Image (tube, rainbow, N blue to C red):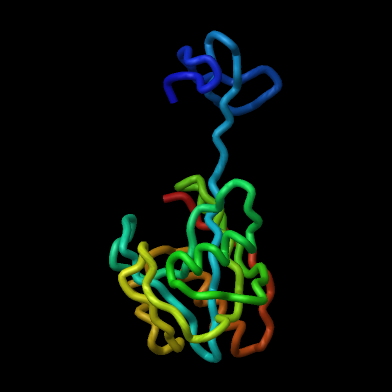
Length: 177
């Protein structure tokens, strides 16, 4: 950040009084510009013994498989964001969304929140951000082509939990690299 969004003057990094972290602070109006992690919201859509995955048509990780997810918008709940992303990326509808994994990814300043849900029907197809959309059984998943660690961690836990019939909420961390 070079300039203040309030007054347009230069900013510099310093620790504001009463704080303990470097922040961008306007040299003129003294506005503190906080930069905080972004929330990625998505779903783990399930149909019987299969899960819905999308092959990415965008970077990062173009051509790799992922769960439908993306950045949460302002004035939107987690549940609304997860449903919207599923509809945008897979042209699919989900219901009964329940919190499943919360994964902190400090290396990219993100928190991934994935919600377990039921695919309303088997109507789905590739949205603008997807090359393909497909339902997979556990043994069919292209594990070596999963786009993100948070997605792989979520899928691994889901298939283990499915065997037990219990789906707890997970709070996980991906270590900085």
